[in-house]
Image (cartoon, rainbow, N blue to C red):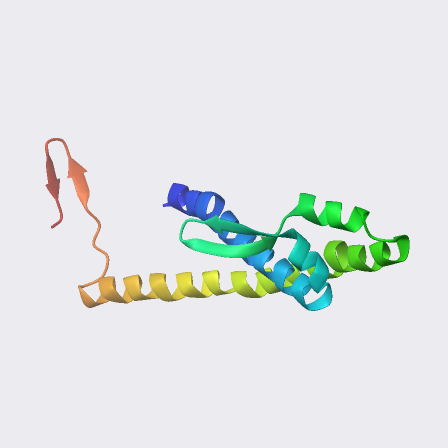
Length: 131
């Protein structure tokens, strides 16, 4: 059970949160710096989830071509405000996971209780008793 939890958090959960982070940053940049979004948007995805995201290399290239005053404003949007907002958005998104697990494990517990509860099984050499 523990291994499944660790695998789901590390192999599945982290990329899903990464997709949510990318989406949030893209959304913030589209609102606050649409020219940057147009210049640096690329496709991203994980498993069945496809999304638009800001390509860091494309963003850096676009920002480097801007006049100095504009660089500061666009950099503030892309590297300060957008990631800060994305962090909040991902936290709001991630808070659903423990709630879903609570409901799922609660349903499993109720299912076992409806079938008579947990009954230990004693293992003996060559046979299983306790059924």
